[in-house]
View 1 (cartoon, one colour):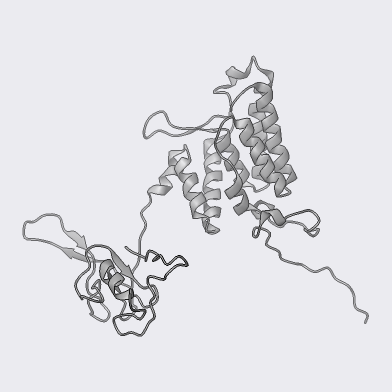
View 2: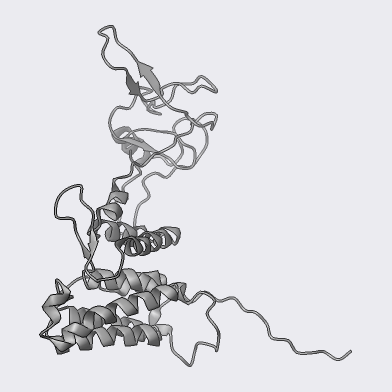
Length: 306
């Protein structure tokens, strides 16, 4: 039978490379399966979320969207900038009653709300969050322990919070940790800001047998005071001591530097002294640690410490 031409499904990742290389002529005709993720990392780096006057911030974000060929987002930012300039405002009115004497200000509130819901329906939580940041949609609580509020009527703070949490999760999934941490730190909602107060747990493994070091050791003195949890000094699998310097064989109580390859390490000053003239691990494991590689300008690169 004759060959029948069939359309092919081609996967393309456009959220990479130099944004200056993007142009309508170089981009093939396509349909975005997830347009809200097409330029997420670029937008997160180029967008402005604060500044004054806010009309200029909106114009800047419009230029960013226009450079990435996002027409709908470009028009959105230009619309808000036009309304702000026409109303002579530098943000949303504090209350709906403040806009009764200003027709352009009276239009601003419902326009921002409709644009937020429109972008949310399109799955574009990034634009929703950035617009909330630029326009100061979130009102922080008046007292400690209170709850944040939305400056826009008929826009529930729980919905705004959901946009923030979803966007932060997207940033973290794409390894944009700096942008995620900055957003959490600057958010006016305490429920979002509390994400930066979560503890970080580091799991270690034995450098000899490779088994995980589980938990610690509880120490109870004779005074009857509250038990204290200390670092585990003996591997429960191979019974070897851990946390010892690979040169002086004494417990490390200060800065500890280790090789990610073989797992051996010790005192920072001892490691610097050894690797100034050697490249192989002093334990005899044969691994070429190279903990302190020399840069092009002959300056020692700082090692990993804990």
